[in-house]
Structure formats: C-alpha cells, structure tokens
Amino acid sequence: MVVVATGQGLAQRTLLSYISASITSVTGCLVDCARSGGDTITLAGANFGSCCASVIVGDVACTGVRHDDINPHGLLTCTLAPDKGTLKSIIFQQNRGQVTYVQSYSISFIECQQGKKSKDFFAFFA
Image: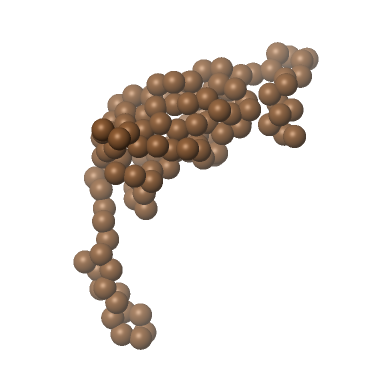
C-alpha cells in the first residue's frame, strides 16, 4: 500500500507490481511481414500479467493483443500494424508495469525491390 499526500489529506493507493517479464520465444511472422500489417506473432515466456499487456514493434504498437486463455501469464498473440523496415525491435510491457526489451528477436517487413513500387507500400501510406 502507498500513502500519498494530496494537499487535501492522505490518499491510499494499492499498487500491483509483477516481476519483470521474460520472453523465451517469438514465433509467427518474423521476416518478410506484410507492410500493410495483419500478420500475427506469438510471444512465449513468463510473468506477462493476466491481461492487457502491450507489444511494440519498432515504434508501432501491435493490435489485438490477446493473452492465452490457458496460460495468460506466459503466452500471448498480437497482430502487426502496418509498418516498413527491417530488424525492428520488439518491446513488451505489462499492464501498467515494467518494460521488457525482447532480446534475440526482431521483425522485418517486406522490402521493395530497388526501382520498384510495392502495393503494400501504397496501402500503408494511403
């Protein structure tokens, strides 16, 4: 329990903190992911929290983050948002909790061939 002086008296807040999450594997689309988004990745590990975690690839949040029904603290999936580039870092954050930088894994989106335009590129920037 934390007691906070508010100027109006004292307020009590209960804070919940998990041990830092550990990510043991990332599966799904890791290479040549669609620039238009929609590919799925799965993170496995421990100490995710029971719900509401966030996953960021590069600097773009994944959508549809879903904790597993059987193992919510250790398995979740999410959908990649539209993006471009290669070797994007993966960042995991517990609900209102600690940030974990996922080591040994990255996400790369389909690259355009030199001198050619990608349909995905235009869908992303339309």
